[in-house]
Length: 412
Ligand code: HGY
Ligand code: MN
Ligand code: MN
Image (cartoon, rainbow, N blue to C red; front, side):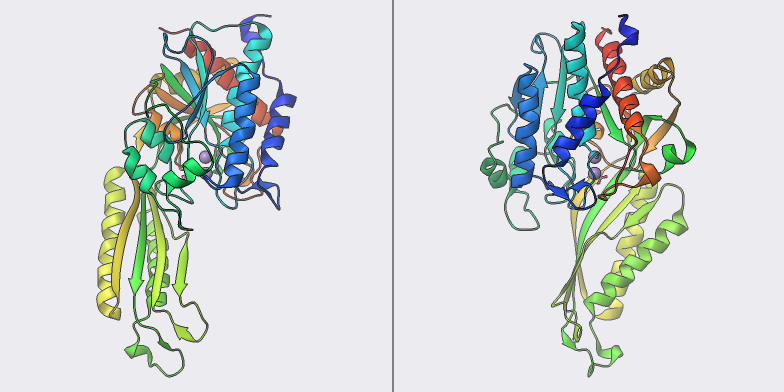
């Protein structure tokens, strides 16, 4: 068979996705495998087992990133693909998992065809991409590219208490390799879009050329507990009101700024959290994103000004703690072009696009030519157990990955 006619085994890929989805399965067809939990360990063990079955050379680094290589990777920089297998608490079965399993399916397809590309391949999964349990997100790939020192990463505290370094050791994935021990020749991440564009336009493939900047903060408002019936409004120092007013402000700010600006208050805790007690404390998060760094900074500044003013007006104290801050990323134009061309050569509809979600690829772009392949998310749904991508689109994306990796491997 001519190499151009090679296709992955869709049935095998879909079966693997379903098998991994059964680890940490939740109602609605999704998964909950928060980073470095026992469910994450079980998912890691399952995927590592599949990597070993393929005879790949496994390396685990000090932050728990797992790399599976074909022969020759130490002499010739490999073409790498990968993503993550940790999920948010209400995750779907495709976010991250799909890209890792499609990478293994590419390796298996080449082995079955007896094809050894001119360059070795590597399939990887990175630690704590989601950033739900530990911040920042994309933590493992950030450490890999030298963007976060290992001891700082180990010191990250989970919302439920444990240190990242202790959890990594506890699940047995604190590996021996130094962060950044391998620099790929190129990196391509296959991922579901997690947004509405491809589905709405009826396009199968996204050639992703850039990615939003991300600003995450935790905001703590300290007020004063008091009786909800006896305390006149003008005498209150109501932390709950400040949190809710800030969420409303951010929603309005996103509408006012328009364009790619998005703002989300995803987590909010009130203390003591009773119906008849004015909240003394509110802890909530602000997730701001934009494709334009200057506009993202403007949104951050507008939030800071709002918080200063409402704190003064309500007699509360506001503290802000940065959880993550990544500038917008432009991917490698040649790799994005190659993805677009490959999709067309395979007879697939394709369009260039921006990623609203963060991905490990945005970190790998710091060390090697990198871009992403998207496939549609039905109704743009993600970070939701009902996240869905049509099987035919999952297979199409994996075939584009197969031939993109082969073409990159043939390049000097
Ligand atoms: O936050 C993100 O965009 C990614 O899902 N970690
Ligand atoms: Mn993801
Ligand atoms: Mn995600």
